[in-house]
Amino acid sequence: MRTFSAIHRYLFETDFGICEIGWGDAGITDFRLPTDDPDMDRGRMGRQSVEPPQVIVQSVQAVRDYFAGRRTDFADVAVDLSTLADFERDVLLAARKIGWGDLTSYGELARRLTGDVGVSRAVGQALGRNPIPLIIPCHRVLAADGAIGGFSAPGGTVTKLKMLEIEGALAKSPVLAQRSFGF
View (cartoon, rainbow, N blue to C red):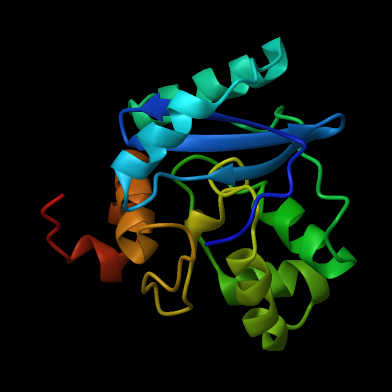
């Protein structure tokens, strides 16, 4: 699990489980989806002492809305990617433009960024290091054949599939639409 670099952090409950958000002066620097250990998360919630500023409260509400199944757009949420390498930042900013329920592939994202689908593996690696999943929707990127691809957040591809299901995006991928899920 990725280590938070945030100056401030806040844990909060959603319909999906307990999430964690981190921020500094320039915006959100970290976001964690629910872990596989909700008891640990609840214990951490009991020890937190930081009250988030209004802008973070609004972001928390947007995350709660998302996991309640309400169409949510995080485009206006301030993020701080200043600690990332230029290529990683470019990949994440490109992924941030993928809208609710829309899907793209690692190769298509690579082509848009560099003109070369051959860097799709590097794009996938950059997405795998996304410090702000959901708010930067790396879950909307699939393999070229429409398969789920990877997902480095807690819960792995099961979490990715659940998020795509919330958005109604599974039907847009012929490969994924044929699956049956028992969430």
